[in-house]
Length: 149
Image 1 (cartoon, one colour):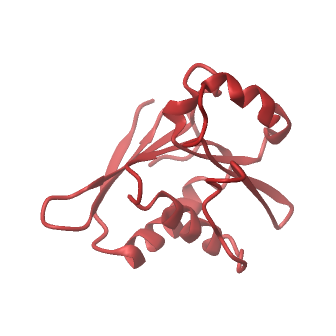
Image 2 (tube, helix red, strand yellow):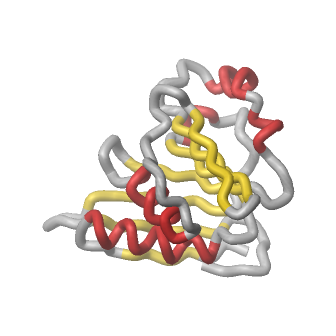
C-alpha cells in the first residue's frame, strides 16, 4: 500500500494541529521519516504530536543529543535528529535496535543521513515551503497498516 495525503498549514499553529492529527494515525507505533529543510517545521510537527498524546514538558530538537525519548502512558516514543551524523554507519552506535519494540514510535528527522542503516519507514512525512507562504506537508504510508493516511 502506498497512500499519500498533502496538507497545507498556514503557520506554526497549523503545523502543531497537524501533528495532533497524526498522533492518531501513528498510535500503533512504527517508524516515521521526517524530511525537509532546516527550519521547515519537523520538530514543531513532533511537538504537536507529543502534546496530543499528553506530553506537557519541553519538546526540543534532538540536534545535539541525537535522541530525545519520551514515555507517555507506558508507550515509548523516540525522536531522532540525524543532521549531525557524518556517516550513516554512526547509527550503529546509537543503540537503535534497543529503541525498537512492537508498539514504540520512532520519529526520525534527516533520515537521508542514515540511508542504508535505518530500518524502512512505515510513513514518510515531507515538509516543503509553499510559494506565497505556509508549508506543504505530505504524509505517505509506505507499509501495509490497519490505519491509513
